[in-house]
Image (cartoon, rainbow, N blue to C red):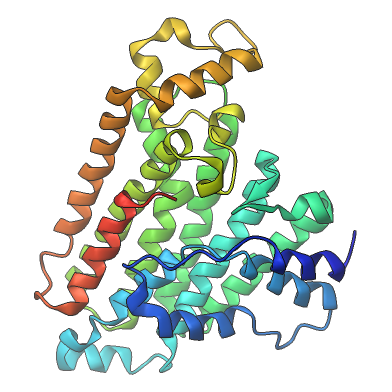
Length: 346
């Protein structure tokens, strides 16, 4: 283990990425969130304190906490009953939830990179390449525990329940991904996987925030639908960008998923139409065959169009979840984040 010296250098690597326009209205909230994420209170071991700096200096889109803040701005439309319901929670409950969601997301990335053997994340070396396997597992575990503590500090039993359910769903999604490698999944298997690994956390972000602002039960259900469908669209676009973007933009090599044996929607669509080109159909695939497949999918206009159409269908369902809310700036902010999810380039 190299200790704190590598953590300090990690914070200096790479250039900061400008916040997307859809996230910009939450700049003040996100700045305050950083203080929660980096809070060293109760940390007596310098390596853990350095870990905070390392993982959160790597940045990220912060789209999940932005969703929490956007739902929080619907609070004024909840009326007297909503004010009564949210009086049970701390004044900063929304901020604590945002910290829980982003810390949980970060914990999953730490473990996910280790499982995948990824060498870079957001253009920087992954933790296990610097710390080693054992320390990285423990670091991820510590982040999971910290996220759970943030969740519990909201004071909402329902939020804690949702958080626990999400941990189960995230694990289910990762196991489906791990054991589904090198086999062509059905569309249903693919959607179950991306719900678990991505959409479940989006769903929990918006549903939990709805609980904390005192939303009525039907509004909580609508915002749960919004988050779930948005998360599905977000992951499909991620899977598409893995073929159509470039390493400098992605912060990792193009085609990384396919090289690790993960069959995402673009691959599924491509090989459904060309089963004879499945490099694993007869056993272990040669590296050159996989490289040819990565290149072919990236320029296949039909596959790209169908993948994007699948994301847009989920987006339409997400936006339909907002129909029960009065038009206004708060609803517009949620819609803007949703549209950003399928127009982004990273």
